Image (cartoon, rainbow, N blue to C red; front, side, top):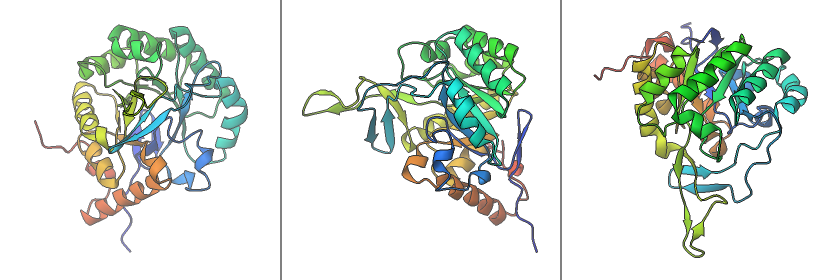
Amino acid sequence: MKSLPDLSVELAGLTLKNPVMTASGTFGYGEEYADYIDLSKIGAIVVKGLSLEPRPGNPPPRIVETASGLLNTIGLQNIGVKVFVKEKLPRLRRFEVPIIANVYGETVEEYREVSEILTESGGCAALEINISCPNVKKGGLSFGLDPDAAAEVTREVKRVTDLPVVVKLSPQVMNISEMARAVEAAGADAISLINTILGMAVDIHTRRSRLSRVMGGLSGPAIKPIALRLVWEAVRAVSIPVIGIGGIATAQDAIEFLIVGARAVQVGTANFVDPQAIEKIIEGLRGYLAQKGLGSVKDIIGTFEGE
């Protein structure tokens, strides 16, 4: 009997059973999806962004559906890192899947402190440092636009953790290669991109924003071509692994990111449309490899034949 293609990948010192992960902010703290999907089949679970203290987030309305996408201004609502470590992380440990904690801070010190708490608690496989969230007035966006500030956050986090550090980059920059090289030089073990793109929606009857804030972050299939281009540019700029994010809803989407060089991908908005989307993407990836007569997912990573 012919063996199934090998989907495992190496990522910043981690071995993932497959390259398909969840995207932060779209999968809760992981266990919310346990009734809909076998969590042990996922490459890794990236949990909601965690801050030092609980955040209520922005007032509603906070989500608006758009053509081929979703606008959100959640405002990084979360229970805070201390409650996560005490109540959520112990329950997540029973699933055979790496847990990656997404870290948010409004100051360098907060990034460092949250990372230190998560490291000392045990149970996390890696940290994803969110310097790119466009949904708050301070913190993430300013760090994500300045290479020096992004590098400073990266260095400070690396100083307090021995876990792999993934830095999540913003698409709102003129030169993604410069930003990627800055965090690589500061010690990042991998980078992930992209986060959402700033957008708006207007209620034509009230002539006001359809969100509680004027702007929100656009995600979903509408942003995939932009994400794919930025991932391709980042892969060419750095030697550390790149994780592709943005509009991945099908196996074909994931395969495109892998071909341009992403070592893994994250699935976000598609989880809201179909809670079993990730399982379908994993199976579709395996089917594609078998159809092409390829023995490993590594056989397609970085095989793009463009310039």
